[in-house]
Length: 172
Image 1 (cartoon, rainbow, N blue to C red):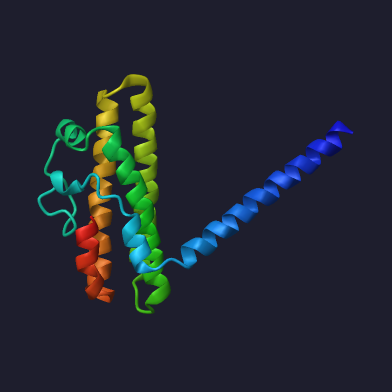
Image 2 (cartoon, rainbow, N blue to C red):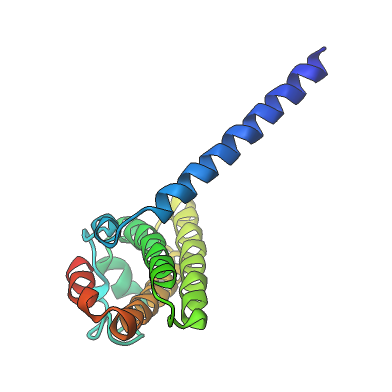
């Protein structure tokens, strides 16, 4: 009897998760460009780490300097959330523009995943060791990938939706 109840509970849990995924996908597919821009978090910007943020890859700061300028875990969390939004922006562009470069879209997806891994690793390390060298290096890697992702997103917008670039730049 207990086994049957556990099986039913497992099926209900799986069904709820699948319904949640479906609703999440529907929400993402129905978002407008303005709704995506509004989800970008401007509390911290990588402008503080790069002289040419949004236009080219690379940072002009050391890992220690980057950690201080990003205000530690606060900046990491903003990077994490904005990477997800930029990934959704790339999906929006792919859905609404026929001539978009699929390799660029896949690169943006890859960037978002790498950023998430780096940020979660850095935050996990920070929870146990605070601002050790490993935390600063992972934060620096996340910020470096983030600036590259933002530059590629700007490139995508310039090529396929130039009128959206000013709004993107202002939101970042």
